[in-house]
Image 1 (tube, helix red, strand yellow):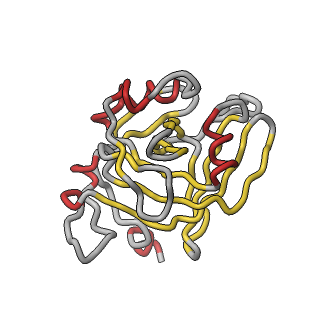
Image 2 (cartoon, rainbow, N blue to C red):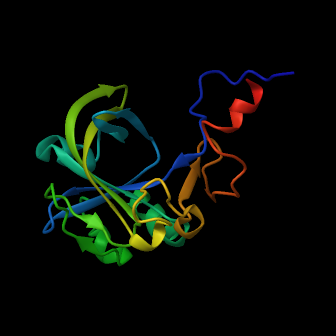
Length: 191
């Protein structure tokens, strides 16, 4: 049996990221779980941001932003950045997050996040009350101790990384569990 719920925003798990806009001197942080990779060539991602906040305004003005993948260790600070307006609060100061200069954009990256993506805005559209931004990934930074093999970027040590995930509908944060298979390989057993 299935229960009908009508149109709902239930899709999980979702990565929890900190989107940084502005400049080293005047930066804002927004917590975003509505994010997805969109293309491999060029590497692009999409984020959804409300239309009333400073984050969308700064992305539209500066045409760039950084995406910083949050870990379970910084859950409280990450949540704070999502429930507090950047118009009157310096979120870097309140959370203790450290700004680091990006190499391709003016918006900083966050030291405490083990993966940082520098993005250039290439498209935007408003749907309902949400800005949808497409960013081309110009540069990727990763903490060296989170890679098993420095010559293979696909060898990220997920256990050491411990990414924070969001469960929409339930409004919960979770950690990722154990590995159960290899994508693009396990299904071969059914061929």
